[in-house]
Image 1 (spheres, protein in one colour):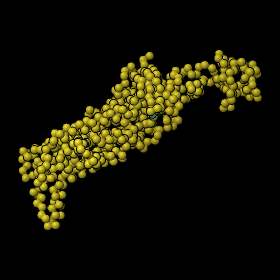
Image 2 (spheres, chains in turn yellow, blue; image 1 turned 180 degrees about the vertical axis):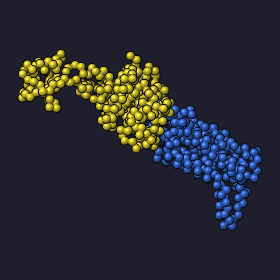
Image 3 (tube, chains in turn red, purple; image 1 turned 180 degrees about the horizontal axis):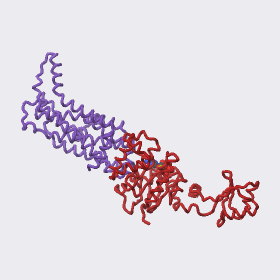
Image 4 (cartoon, chains in turn red, brown; image 1 turned 45 degrees about the vertical axis):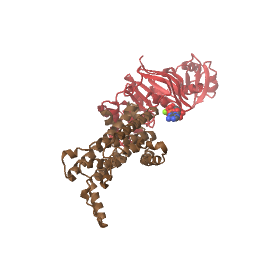
Amino acid sequence: METVLSIKGLTKNFGRLCAVNKLNLEVKRGQVFGMLGPNGSGKTTTLGMLMGVTNPTSGEFSWFGETPTHHLRKKIGAVLEHPIFYPYLSGQKNLELNALVKQCDARNIPNVLDLVELTDRRNDKYKTYSLGMKQRLAIASALLNDPTVLILDEPTNGLDPMGIAEIRELIKKIAANGKTIILASHLLDEVQKVCTHFAVLKRGNLIHTGPVNEVGQGEERVEVNAEVENLNEVLRGFSGTATVQRENGFYEVTLRENFHGKDLNRFLFDQGITASHLVTRKKSLEKHFLEILADGK
Amino acid sequence: MLHLLKIDLKKLTSYRTFWVVCGLYFVTLAFTTASGMEFLKWLANKSSEFGASVNINRIPLYHFPDVWQNLTFISGFFKLVLAIMVVISVTNEYTYRTVRQNIIDGLSRWEFLQSKILTNVLLSFMSVAMVFIIGFVTGLIYSPSTSIQYAIQDLEFFPAYLLEVFAFLSYALMIGFLVQRSGLTIIILMLSHMIEAIIKVNLKGWAIELKPIFPMESISNLVPMPFARYAFQEIQDYVSLNSVAIALVWVFLFNYLSYLKLKRSDI
Ligand SMILES: Nc1ncnc2c1ncn2[C@@H]1O[C@H](COP(=O)(O)OP(=O)(O)OP(=O)(O)O)[C@@H](O)[C@H]1O
Ligand SMILES: [Mg+2]
């Protein structure tokens, strides 16, 4: 698969603070790449270097196999951290200005405004927009030149639940067109829903990278409930049980390798117990993320 | 190039403050330069109250070719207003952080600076055009002889005035990039002449020789003060190539420092 972004040994120091430490990363065409990490782990700094606003201390990166230039940036739509626009210009005028900067066709403006549902408010000054509307305008501006790569740094920050769901659908739609997306986010649920790959940063160090769908693999977890007094003991008596935890009013059983939900079900049935609730859960990215962070000391 | 100018003008032309400050600049510039005779009349009136009579027609303020140096010299004082606009235009980019988004969107840092420099060029040319038109019209009105031969004399003050305005705007741009806060930058801009004067007064020995190469000094030396000639004193009624050379070096340095600052910093 074609490499869109290749980062080698990228480092950024702010005085004595090392914000990004010898980062190596590859993003291939068509990936939806999630960048995860706690606050201050270096996500925005990394993206800032990729977009030419933060000067790297050392290391290099290439877009599409070429050394980065400002011409290449025009093919990338990016929103870093906060939406940034001229407050005294209307949404429409701001986008016209963006089109001038990106040297792309201004005829695309109505489309992107429509996409983010700002058409009604396009002639109002940017400073009168709500936070969510500002976010939407930022996304519209990132999509303006029909970019091959989209970089979104917490794009759903401040959006209502409907907005979040819309952005999720939008990202999926854009990804389905074979575009590459790099997404920094704290909403792990969202990342799990839309991303194909992810990387975890911690204090500037890359501590994990891999496909999202591998997250669910490994041991299985099963949520169980039944109207039995000593369910906890019964579950512990099952030979496939690794641990049992009480969570949200259910018992959450983590199974040993090669044991599955149906084995537990059969076991309970053999014990004469009928489960009132039995769900096999994939491990959530959130759990996985917290484990990675705990391990990556 | 034109494309970069278009970008900066797009930012400014929807900005109310831009129209207010530029309007103020061009109106006061036009008003002051065109009202010299009215001023002289007022002066003559005042002095006749004290018994002295001044024949204002003996003062050829607007006669070709005197008018060129007179007007370009007076106009030089107003460049500060234009410079304040330039400062606001740069520091806004930092307060709104739009310089960051411009670069993310695909301008190079040099292109961003170019767009600002080009606006400075445009504003300088507009000032020149304005002063030329006023000088030409008033010259036609007040000159006893409107023969072309007098009218085209001393036009070298226009390139000098152009350089004067552009150099000062370059200076304002640089301070804007270095300081990034509008209030502080404007204060520095207004105090520049004074600070330089204080330094010059305190120069000793060989350092006194350095006076003409000070930035503010060299910029104001481009169009020398003409009015002493009406008190029968010798004046420098030409543009000295030395001043032009020094000012050109400053123009280069100002813009180069802006470039270095923009290039080196994280935005
Ligand atoms: N301009 C700067 N000057 C000094 N330190 C900075 C600067 N920008 C970022 N940092 C530091 O670099 C580190 C990484 O910051 P960064 O913004 O990249 O984190 P992040 O992963 O994006 O965090 P968040 O999830 O909160 O957005 C932080 O410790 C931050 O304090
Ligand atoms: Mg961040």
